[in-house]
Length: 304
Image (tube, rainbow, N blue to C red):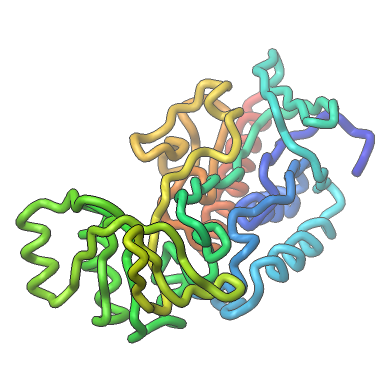
């Protein structure tokens, strides 16, 4: 880390999207600071998939390799700290960290990701990202044709049933209480021989995060190999909202085609602004963001 406090761009979040944006900006000779707290949402996930050249690699290995490559560009700096506040200034923005440091930049990029809210089911958090999974494109191949559950209710359960049936026909929906599916949705699900279990769940029995069975409130059990679930989430970082960035109805940072937020000179990429939660997509949006930010800066500088 350098003593410099003023940067062209500050990137809050130093995982895949943030590092990808930093590489594009570093190659464009921009002075960049990445601030990262070191808590990626996929830190329990054993392997990353659906990302060419990295298929099956550990997410932590991909991130560490990316960080080393990005920091070879000498205008890019990395700070392990937590960004806690942001302010608009006459020349851009000011970001404060948990350790008391203050930095300024002309542009901000938020690649801060999302924080999943773990369900109040014993064993759920231990299995999250290992055998309780959210993305079939990331993890579905590894559990194809296996006995699989969908832990969801209402339209979310219906949507996942249609989707996951592509990977396995041995499928059961667990609504964890009274079903909120419409009659039409229920009929369509049953037409495909997918059972719906409405009993409340108390626990997931597992070994080192690999689920073995669901335990219900009546002490009955259901054996299975994998569970798809999309629990509620919230923004990992509140600074974009403090600065006036709008969120979508789903709780994502609202961006337009060039990753611009609703506030001038603030951009967002990765999971925080897109529902496609995949490493490959985060890298793509990060790279695009770096290019878009630099293009704006070159135009501004040319017109001075």
